[in-house]
Image 1: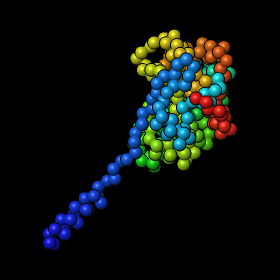
Image 2: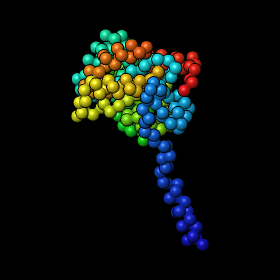
Image 3: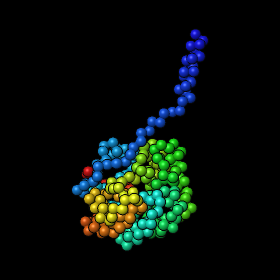
Image 4: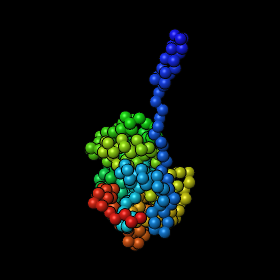
Length: 262
């Protein structure tokens, strides 16, 4: 009887000492591309999650406003041309940067800030954020913010984008608790592969074919074809009656209450 009791206690202790199972589900952002001026289909589950946690992938689907965002992990020599185009066209954008970009391309970061663009937080070291502990998630954002403040004087960021679009509901919740709003996207295409130079027409056609009211566009600054296509795209979008807004504009309009008839 004593042997049985000892065995039972040891059996229970195995569970008490075992590390807790990770229960957070990992999501990979994706959607069916937009066409004919309609927003992309992200599916009911993603719609529900983003609504619950106050994250965004588009703006008002009834207003012809575009939100340009760029992801920058490293500099390939095309960002300055993009900045020149934005200045010429009087368009403001959000640049989601990594900690590496902050320290390796500080002059360009200062250029972005001087021109009135928004700096977004793409994490410090570009990890899979969904697999970090809550403290690890926060450390990634705060370490980025510290570097940004040292370089530009900006106190902190408010918009975040998870590397590779990988996220969890816990990540969204931790972001909310610490003043970070997650920004996904509704227009994107394969533009990050620096080994494939597809030309300006490729980027232009992808952008125009997916264009829709309220679009949040994701482009990568490492792609030469993006820098080359941007002037023609902006001019054509303006001809079609689109204007360009900031993420601050998007949140303001959302909190004022837009009529979402989609």
